[in-house]
Image 1: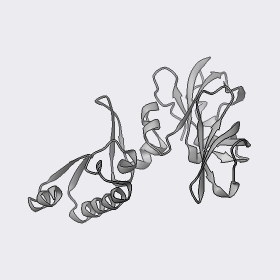
Image 2: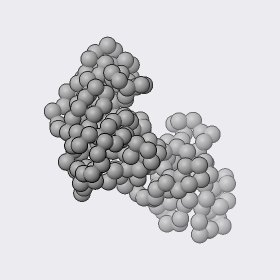
Image 3: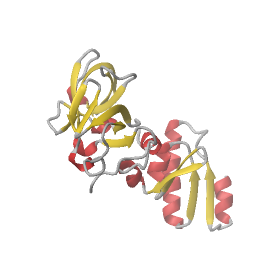
Length: 222
């Protein structure tokens, strides 16, 4: 009703502050689509405030990510997903959220989790003179390949919990040397069971690196 009254007034800007927070999951999806249709039809600016990154990603043409009152990054949903500016944005955008691992760079090698592997070539220009330095690697659950052959970070893990989602399985796996779960989203055709030992690969092109102290993204070569 409040939205209807606002439409009648024909404002130049609509401000919506958590408008779907009290709706159940099914109604939230339906209402989200209706608001998006309304925005397309009216062509009016909508400023939409939300803590739900799914709402931001599905409804926003541009997203401003804030943390404790500070503006972290502004961009299209795809820009924020593919090129997060820092650790906070990377962890906020995406569902399930990005996995993170503490690593150390030593020359042209990355070390961590009991593994040692070459620094992906696209980061070598940015880290050519880094010496020994702590980094945080980030990789999204949907980018992990089960039994993949791509060049990248290879991880041996044990399946702890398997959530069956129909066409996909959401895997909570444990990795030696890492506190907490690593989450992977894989095709349900793999039929993973708790206790299975898995070989997962993060393709080099999907790996994100962040400064271990500042959290800023390490910019990769185009």
